[in-house]
Length: 464
Picture 1: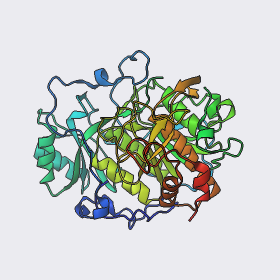
Picture 2 (picture 1 turned 60 degrees about the vertical axis):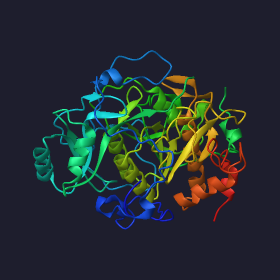
Picture 3 (picture 1 turned 90 degrees about the vertical axis):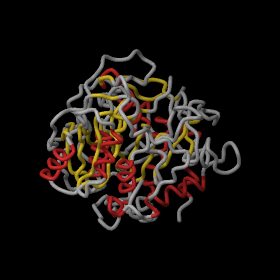
Picture 4 (picture 1 turned 30 degrees about the vertical axis):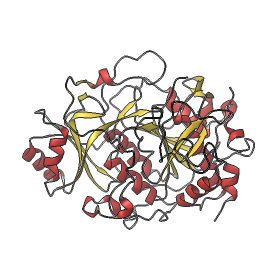
């Protein structure tokens, strides 16, 4: 997270645009100490030259699940809907309501090619100016305007510039940084859903949550993930609204998103941690992959829905734009929960989990042992069940494993806290989770388990 200081304690449950609470979003105020992220262990993913032999994105969109790779799908082209005033905290539209497709994006050309951790012929830039200024910048630097939109969380115009002449991303970003009309520039990083290879849901017992008393009634939770199968009985009456951040890409995979929503707020035989919670689901992944511009579009939509919690069960490299969006969402009072990652003990830090103000969740099994594939590091905040759990999947159910699903357990648990005490701030909840977690591994906070295993009963009792 970057730019001018927003105190961690400056929380509010009303997701209204408060300029005094999101003053980090202006790149000209990038000197605040509280806006700098502890970068220890950071591996941000390069902004250097495009890798040789870059291939078309459909070839690189891979299915992270242990099934055969699906036929390639076209690259997502986000088109966010116009901003609408946030609603209140009451239940949203009926389940299975219409999926919103954004309409106001100025799109010239869809994303084309990818290699490594970022799209090699694109950059994302925030611009101080209107569409005319964007076109002038493009002409000045020999770039293409592939999309542009007003970002609520970034508080400025976000532009996806294409690089038609093969210049390295790092060179273009350096050139643009010298132009006074640009505020912040980043590669268009690639992010991956965090499902490991894959029984009854033992999570209730392990996190000290009474299944008979569990409730997240009317707590609004945003989930950014794949498409979902909203005909699954476990999601009946659960989905308040849906948004498609990549409407030009056919929906082929629904399992991951269905599992996440079900673990948070599922009903019936596959009851989630917080039955009664209202899920605002944004589809931003296909084939297990997405890009930064698509994810930012989904985050902006979530911010407009006045949600209290945002679940982000995906991982990618450090990206300054994502950091700013997360910080500003937190300043608006939202609790941010993210998967720590499934890339192994020696993997670099996973983002958005490693940003300050984001609760990074690792996965444990029924015996509280750490999932071997889990990322490690000082950013890991808390542990939760995420190994071999039964969850809704597509039209049925499946056994799932991964920090993705541990994050969903934590999101659902937090929904219980907010249902019991709606006035609890994001800062208070984070402190309570840390203070009451059951220590695992070495004494105190460690790089494997964070503060330890989530104990929701103790966290509910730990009120300031």
